[in-house]
Length: 286
Length: 184
Image (cartoon, rainbow over all chains, first blue to last red; front, top):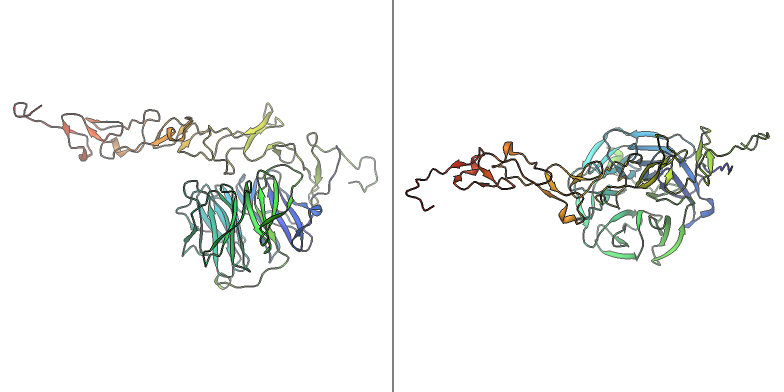
């Protein structure tokens, strides 16, 4: 069937939801908080790779991803740039990735080496931040304004969500009760709300990491993997549904779903904001 | 490129039936986009994560993609559980190891293929005093640790009757009790 499909296209202006599906990175434009599903396209084809984690640098408009098949951590400019490998050595199974757009660093989890690492955005200054008490670290995110990182470990024996300073110090467990497989994790800097999606309890829950109060947003969801937010909605990838599911944080209801044409697992998901939130932290000066 | 204006502008996708293809703008490379279920790659020649095989038979007989086969010793929530081509298991759990998570990892013994997790692989737990060179490994099947002279039990944790001083780390010594003054 000869259907030359101009399906690969540069990221148009505006905000987008980006997600990975083993050999590609897809985008769905956002109009306000609505998915413009009929304008969804493939941003980047990486046919030989298994792309898991994804993060977006709002400053240089670059997308970063982890690939467990090479394994490698790479980046590309979605206006039509070629992929650049940043980290290729001493990786096991790199899964989650997060950008500190202020300090210009990236953080990632490695579920085979059981550690959390950091490097500059060009891959230099690489350092292991955490290498104890990790079994299956997956999701990771940054709070650049306050200089924190958060991560989740779906260790079947004792799953937990933890936080630490961006240099790995002051590590502490935030959540460990009533957790099962916390695959997805996201943070809304405006409301200081940390939310997670659990494929074992089938719930989406949130808490304010400083105050500790925990609230349930959704229950009975199927199999979440990645999670992101635009402030109002939460977006999670679901392995069972093969879809991006949209949940309104305030009405606590599912409001939309996007199912790509290709029916395989979806992995990481992130919000590519049109502009960066303002802020500063100690890593930006040192 | 349909804009050239010749009869050969549009070419057949070099992809399996049902798949579509696209030209990567910069490199002009043709990539299959909707590969059949379970397959991926430029030409749908690879298996999706969690599956293995050689769908186009690029390295010999063609093998359709099938789920990682690791004796139930992988976690379905993990990614990258097996090599996409060979099927070699990469993330064995329950203290198992081997190409198909089919044996116990070093320092463990039992039956990696047992149905019940509790029956799978148990720690050797060799007694450091009674084991040759303080080894921590044991027989994969029986769990027998390699005992020093006159040391007994699976874990080399006791002396033979009539012997004592396991703590010496050199094997147990004969009691040398006088048979006339001893009760047994």
